[in-house]
Amino acid sequence: MKQLLGITMLLAILYGILVWATPENSLSLTNFNLGKRIGDYGIIGLGAGILIISGGIDLSIGSVVALSATVAAMLLTGGLGYELTPALALPLVLLMGAAIGLINGLLVTKMKLPAFMVTLCGLFIYRGVARTISGNVSRGLQDQFKDLVEMLYTEPVFGVPRILVVFLGLVVLATVFLHLSVYGRYLYAIGSNEKAARYSGIATDRYKVLAYVLCSTLASLYGIMFLMDNNSVRPSSDGSFYELYAIAAAVIGGCSLRGGQGTVLGIVIGTAVLVVLPQLTNMLGVSSELQFIVIGGALLLGTILDELLRPRRVVQRMG
Image (cartoon, rainbow, N blue to C red; front, side, top):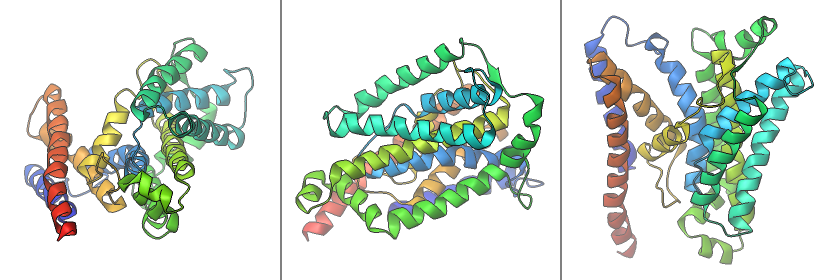
C-alpha cells in the first residue's frame, strides 16, 4: 500500500509539473497523445504484470507484437496466400498469440527451462519468423481497410482515444480476475511461494501456463492495434524494446520481479508514469537520447524500492 501511494504521489507531481510547463492544454489526455500512449503501453504492461505476479517473465513481448502485426497485415491482404476477412483474420492472430504463450508456458513448467532463456530465445525466433514470412519488407493495409482502422483504432469514444478505452476495459477484466477471483489468488500464491502453493493443492503448472497465455495474447492484441495505428509494420524493427516498456510499467507500478506482489491499479499508474516521464522531459527540452536514461532510472528506482521495502514486510510478518 505504501508503494502504491508513493507512485501515485510521483505521478501527481510529474503531471503537476507538466501542467505547469504547458498550462493551456496539458490537462487533456487527448492532447500530447498521453491517453493514446497510456493505452499502448498499458495493454502490454498489463500482460507483463499478470505474468510477473505469478513469478514469470517474458522477454519476447516486442517480437510477438511485431509478428502479430505482420501476420494480421498479410492475412488481410492475401500475403500468405489467402485473403481473409477481418472477422477471421484478427481472431486467428489472437489465437496465434495464445499458442505462443502456451508454448512458452509448457517449456517453463513441463521441461523446467528458465523463463528468462525460453522467452529470450522467443525474442529472436518470433522476430525471425516475422522477417521470414514478410520477406523482411514492410507490410501494410490497403485503402479498403480504412473503415476497419477507424472502427478499431482512430475513431475516438466520447473524445477519448479508442485504445485507451480498450485498455480501461481490460483493466476492469484484469481487476476481476486478479483481485476478485480464486484464480487470481492462485497466481499470487504461486508467485509468493510456488512450492507451498503446490503442496496446498493448487495446480501450479496450469496457472503458470495461463499467465503466459494471457501475456502473449495481450501482446498479440496490441500488435493488431499497432497495425491499425500505423497502417503498416516493419518486421525488422517495430516492437523493439516493447518488452522492456511492458516490464518497466509493471515494476514501476509495484509488481515485484520476485513474484507474488502487484496490483492492477499499480500497473495503470506505473504505465502513466512511464508515459508522462518522457513527455515531461520533452517539454522541458531534454534531448530524446536522455529519455532512455530517465526511463531506466525510474525502473532502477522501482527495483530499489522493492528491495528496501521487502525486508520490512518480512519483519512485520515475523512480528
